[in-house]
Length: 413
Image 1 (spheres, rainbow, N blue to C red):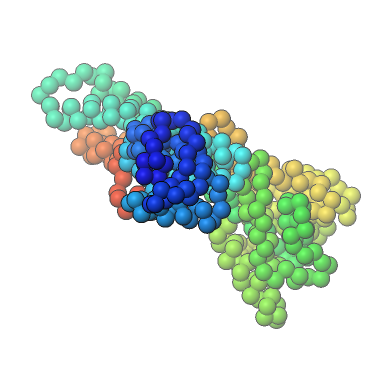
Image 2 (image 1 turned 90 degrees about the vertical axis):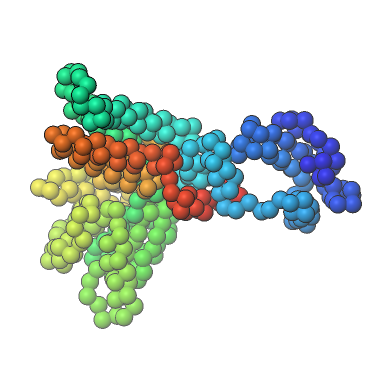
């Protein structure tokens, strides 16, 4: 530190200083901030030097630091060190990257909740209750000669039920947070010339797709990111689904079918004047099963109709005009409902691995409930459930998983 600054700066105070090279000549002048361990982001001694910038000056300063034994930080290294030094748990460490990558204000707020420990606190509270139940069960197994109070035995199922309820609450919030983090892929599908590109332009608020009366104008998948109530969505406009002799259009249709397989939800556009015809029914029959869909009847402006939603059996029908924008708010609200989004306080950011761990925990708790008559199996399922929860906060995490997580960070941080 003295070799670069020529002096020892006061801890946690901005100090104006010259930055020196090996010969004692000034490379730059700026502000130095020294954070002695453990009161730093990483829990180690940290020196920050704020110079004038410029690639040549900063390169000279970097080379000087490397001469003295420093090395360039690897992706995620600062946060990785903070995790290893118990400044952050793993869920909080991941939320640092999520906060940096947040694309909406809602996502940023949820990431900050996770960074502040809301998610981790909820998980640890669940683990504590799980440990309490495990202690009771293990005592019955290890000391069968001891008298275990009957009320404790009778309440075992109640305790497991309370655990399951708490888990469902956390899982619901995590699923909302995962939607904020990952967004959702919404595919516009239908025959040519039903208004898919017009609807994409209407949702995005700009002319991102060509609109023409000529069927087959869209030949490729066009992607556009939009926000609805702070939820990031990726809208995909696809080629009209029909048989064609045009080789390029055939390629577009093939790509459209691939996009449909990967969709989180599908908007099937129909002409409000003609309704569902044979070609439309064929498209509906060929849609991948299990993916939420909404039938959107477009061009109500040509019929003088008002926007509305109707339910016909299991099919939900929404009537709008992509040309005038009438019914667009109905579509936005219905689309969020289709994705399972509901505005709820306390949503925290969650990743796919968090959801997998929570779902695995649910499976273990359900199997434990089924094995209540066999305490050995009951106890083992509880142990496995706790292991899944601990993997979220990093109480138990494989080294290869840590490498995968931190390698996805931006450089350094």
